[in-house]
Length: 395
Image (tube, rainbow, N blue to C red; front, side):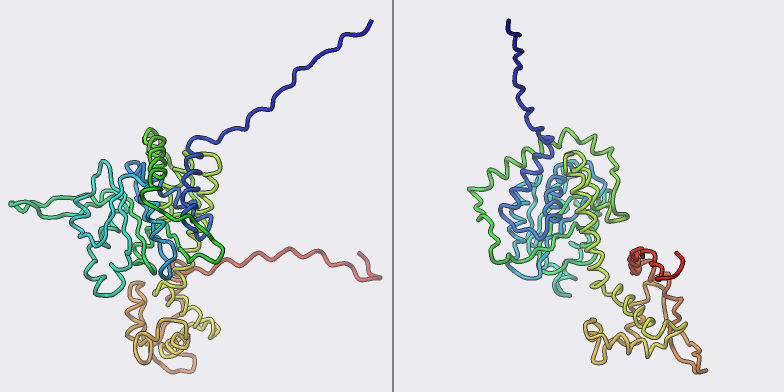
């Protein structure tokens, strides 16, 4: 008699695990941005995605990060990116040449707007424009942090009234914005599309419904998480103001889960490091400090260096901006003014050959160099393998 055969029921494979709701919404938003704009890097794409999402929880943040969308020249996609941002942020407030009074009267503490400024470079591109719009710059800077209201006299009784300034803001323009704005910003450095890079044309009537649907999904996901976000203090890969600026984006990533926490911290570290390098090369006073350090190094780091010799070394750098300070470049007076904020000034010094002249002691700069332009740590040298014993010698 044949043995009964045992039949086994085939087991169907488990369906793939779906990403968390928030992670999927962020992925869909990222795909929409990428559809219309060629971003300069994956980190920049991550940052913009998280910044847009963060506008939907502004009430939870202590700091309102700025999004600086800058480009070296026209036709780099900054206005197109701002179009996508406008249709997906919460409560957009678009301004072009708006007065400071109109802006701060539009800011509500309970539901802050997302302030959007195109052609922001026109506000600060010349000395005259910068002076005219100094109040706008002050408003943008103050609104980075809570509890920094602006006071105005209002009504027939001229009563002092506090107006809130706290609101997230995106500013697009050609060239860098003022240092104080850039320092409070997640900076997106756009570039012109290369041959072969293609994006979809953006048509308001056709494309905004899909972007608005994403905006509504972001709001439905994030609004119930307000109290949770309010209490979160995520570990950050950076410190100080950079941490303040990036924290809302990292909180959003941690709420989303999936790959986003790692993506957010990578973008934060990479982009912050890049901007720190930009500041070292482009910040005027920081560049001066670096130039002075190089001048001392070129002289084998003497204890004192004469002002005349220091200026010769600085003005000899053809790529430095000192030639703009006059027909002969940077002068002793100009050098004094630039170093004044650090509490450094020249004095009569005695030199090894017995002469006396105006100059600087190297130890005047040590603390300032360490704080504002520390030299990068030397790369670790690879360990050397042990030397092979010569033939005929004992090991």
